[in-house]
Amino acid sequence: MALNLDARQRAMLEEMRVRVWWPQPAAQPQPAAVPVQGSNQAPADPPPAPVLRVAEPPPPPRVPIAVPVAVVVPEPAPAPAPVPAAAVAPDGRADAIAAMDWPALQHAVAGCQACKLCGTRRNTVFGVGPAAADPATPPHVDWLVVGEAPGEQEDLRGEPFVGPAGKLLDNMLRAVGVSRHGEAGAPQRAAFIVNVLKCRPPGNRNPALEEIAQCEPFLKRQIALLRPRIILAVGRFAVQSLLAGSVPNVHATPLGRLRGKVYRYEGVPVVVSYHPAYLLRSLPEKAKAWADLCLALETLQAQ
Ligand code: URA
Image (cartoon, rainbow, N blue to C red; front, side, top):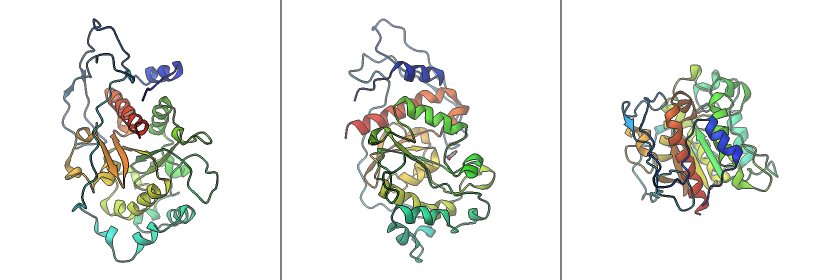
């Protein structure tokens, strides 16, 4: 599970002000405590509180980075998860989506009129990843990143995470050797990136429950067809959508408290992290997001 960063990756992390802990002699001074700002992306987070940056660890065996210990949360027994009414509407829509192949799913998203966002969107945003060898099948990716909803630029271009938050996401993924374009024949270096919502909420407002419920079958089918080996859920809407069936009270749990564990969605390990747009406003949290990324990488490599 060694994470060997080359000079370019280290420079990139420096540039992002992501602190990486390398093995140091025991006499090295401890890093200072870093205050953490409040969260806009996850308003349910606790108020600003001093957070201890992880103290200089004893030389770690292989991954010289402070990462939380992976705790695999077993898949729950069928849970009495709150299922939005629309998801179980007797119109067969969710069942029909669950049976779609990749091209049918793309087509269904492109023409979706299940909620009022279809009236204001310029483009639907299905998701992006490396080109598939056969367009009738999904690309081979180990990584799936799930965000919240398209913003203005994503709505214009029909591609997720193309604004400033997307650049940060790309940089972070690149630091662990992963990209949205991937590398032919190397799924471990490729990520597919999607959002919970496929259409932009006007003015970038938060997704509404009804919109999430209508879009949920699309996300579920994307995951079933892509069969990623690790899911990175960024921001509370992605986290709540993916963990609602397995984490009691997830809607009331601050995202910061959900980090550091490995959950499962339909059998796929899920790692929780902050939304890149939030990280742009809260530099100290980048170190935590880096730890989340390392946990995801570690979980993937341990399979
Ligand atoms: N924020 C998201 O959650 N997704 C995007 O595609 C862009 C910004």
